Every structure is written in structure tokens, then in C-alpha cells.
Image (cartoon, rainbow, N blue to C red; front, top):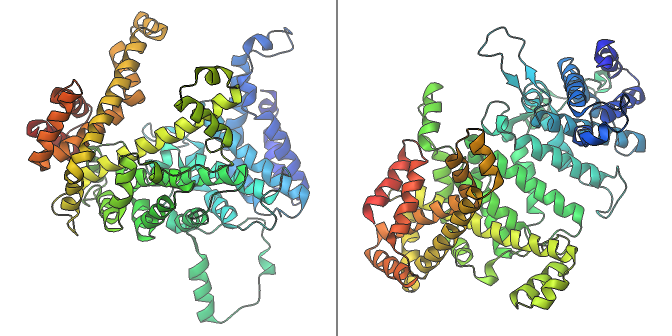
Length: 568
């Protein structure tokens, strides 16, 4: 509080504009310490150990929030972005400065996400006087995204095994982490801020000496250079970063983490329809399918990206339509996702996705040895579990159990992403789709004695059971009892627990089965017989569809689910 009261922050902001970069970096280093989110996570009991010396958790939270708000209000974000451009990685002290700026940006994003940092618009209009996130300010007022993409695109001049805290490899990893955090924020994904990745403005530094630019060149060549350098194509940068691993696994933990961050960032951008259009245009779907065909580590992330590319956001069609009408845009809703599904099939995606749907062992992408899920420890632990060796299970170390858990999580994510992709195909592919896409999709369920229908039944029953168990456990939990005492809607909370633990996947499995049943009487009869053999019935699928429909608002998606209900 005193730092704000006595205008120390104003002095810090002034020093960030100092012509001596060392002065500015010293200020950044101090701010990193003052705005460390870990300060808010300390135990309140520990804060009370030395009464009068330690601040309570609430006071500490308020002071950190006030400090962060004042810094951002004073233009701190713009100053940080300007400073990062004048630092050279090949100078150890300046590389440390870049690392500190990235750490400070990450801290501000964490504080904002925790609700500590709240920004308000200077406009007096009540409608516009709403909280403005750090992500929105970075996208609207700075060129930070362009700098991050430029740093990720930059090739490392040293070996990937470098472990120095400020080595180029570590800086590249840190840049990918910050980029992933920004692009996964709802303000970007909901198109409240920022532009599509393919046309980001080029990064420029306020400290650049314009007098040092080269002498004038011919007018024609100057225009060519300007056209080429005016924009940064973030979509191309992400795809090229992934393409390096389309045939080979990452060799170190740093590489592995960088690749995961890149996939997370790319998947998040595909919640925006304008980015999906560029992703399809740049043959992103073909690249993801290539990763899957090679069965390398990148295949796991490729499935996640494909899921987002063909599914879009969780918002229903009618909600998006309402948004478009409000903006005066009469463009067809979800056209980009429909085109992505059609491109997926045209590129031979059915030959890739159905073996994964059937859980063929040879089709599942293998995690890299440098990852926890692909380590030899994870393989041994899973092998012991598969052979039901109780003695071996009891002897597993905590490290082995953690590795086995990572392996199971990897396989579960593969399975769930495949189900989401399959559902998106059945949702968007219709009889008007080109290249006989609808018929080609439907015939897959009929061939081989309807084995895909058997698998769909198996998955539906599996996730239905998981969802019901999660719902039961919630009702029996202390959390439910506390919620009831507070007057909260316990049924709604139980539904949330159910959906998060398999219910959402179950709904989509029911829709996949219904697509096959509605399109083929042979599949319909086979599914009914298979459900009876499993001691179940078509009523389970209908109940799943009914619950799914109740969660959707009016639109084509809801209409499709209700048509399935009447058809089966």
C-alpha cells in the first residue's frame, strides 16, 4: 500500500522508460518479487506466527492487487513490451531481463485470473465500465503477441540440451507458456479482443533508433519488403513449430513441454471461427493427420487440435447465430467448422479416426520417452496393472504410480478426443456435403458386421456408468451437504459433477450411435440386439439424448438431437 501511496510505482514506471536498459531491468526484477502470485498462496496461519510483522492473507491480497492495478493503469504493460524488444539474448544480463519480463507478465496474468487484478474502463458509460482483463489490454494496446510469435519462430543457436536459466531454449519455452496462457483466455477465444492470428501487426520497439535504418531503396522493392514484413502470421508459426515433430518425437523434457504448449495454444485459437478458416487453408488438418499416421508423440496433441478444429466452442449454433445477427452479420453460422469436417474426410481422416475409435493398439499415438506418460517407468507400471499383479501394485513407488496415472490420462484423452471428433463429423456432415462424405461416414458403421456400432455401445455404457457414479458420490459428499445448507442448487451441482466425469462424453456417444441407427435400419437392429446382450436397452440411449437436448438452447444442434430421439 505504501508503494502506491507515496507514488513509488510512478517512479518505477518512469524508470522503465530510462535510456539505460540496466536501470529498467532492475525495476523489472523488483516488480517480479513484489507481484509474485506465490505471496497470495502462503498459509494464513504462517502469516500470524509473528504478530505485527506479518500481514494477514486478506491484507496481502489487497495490497498486491492495488500494486498490480496501479502498475497496469500507469501503462506498465506497454512499457514492458517496449523494453523486451531492446534486449539481446546473447548478452547474459539482457537475457535475464527478458526472462524477468516474461515472468512478470505471467504473474500479472495469474493475478488477473485469480481475481486480484481488476481493471475498469475510463469511460463513464456504465455499460462499458466493465472489468478489462490483462489479456484484453495486451491484445488491444500492445504488440506482445507479435513478439511472442517472433520468439517462438526464432531458431535456437545452441543445442536443445542447454539447461542455463536464460538459455535460448528456456526463453523459447517460457514464451510458449505465456502465449498459451493468453490464447486460452476467454477474452481472446470469444473474440472480445485481438485479431485472427494470420494478420498480426509486426512487432516494433519504441526504443529502436530509426536513424540507424538502411539507406533508401528502390520504390518497388521497398513496397515488396513492406508487404512481406507488415504482418506476422501466427497461424503459420504454430503449424511450422509442430511440423518439426510430425515424424520424430521430442528428445528432451523442454522440447516436450514446448510442443504441448504449442498444441494448447493452437487448439485454443480454433475456438475462433476466423482462425479455423486459416487453419484449414494452411493445410493444418493434413498436418495433424500426418502426425497421427506416424503414431508419434505429436499425435496426442494433434487429436486435441482436430477436436477443436471440427467442434468449435461449447456454444450452440443458435447462440452464435444470435451474436452474428447482433453484429449485423448474416454469414452462415459454423461454416468454418462444417468445412473443416468436410476437409477432414476429403483428406482421408476416416481411415485414421476409425482405428482409433476402435482402440486398435497399433493406431494409438505413443508418448515420447522424455514424457512422463511415455517413460519406461510408466510402461512397467501399466504392464503390472494389466497382469493384475497385486504384489507388484503394492510395491509400486509414488513415482511409478504417478507415471502410470500419466499414461492412463494420455490414453483417456486420446479416447475422449476421438469421440468428440466423431460427434462433430455426425453433427456437421450431411447429404449435401461434397465428395459423398455423408455416405462414406455412414457406411463405416455398417461394414465389418457393424463392429463400430458395438464399440459405440461399449463406450456409451462405460461413460454412462462413470457419470452415474460421479453423480452418486457428489450427493454423498460433504460438499453437497454444505451446498444444501447454504441454499445452493444441489441438483445443478450434481449435474455439473456428472458432466465433468463422463456425462458429456456419454451424450456425444449417444448421438454417434443415433446417427448410425437413423441412417441404417441394419445398424438400428444391431444396436438394439447388442444393448440387450449387455443387459441394457435403447432406453439408456434415449435418456442420454433427452438429457443432452435439455442442455442445449434452440438451434440446429438441438433439432438434430430431437430428431434422433424420434427416429430410434
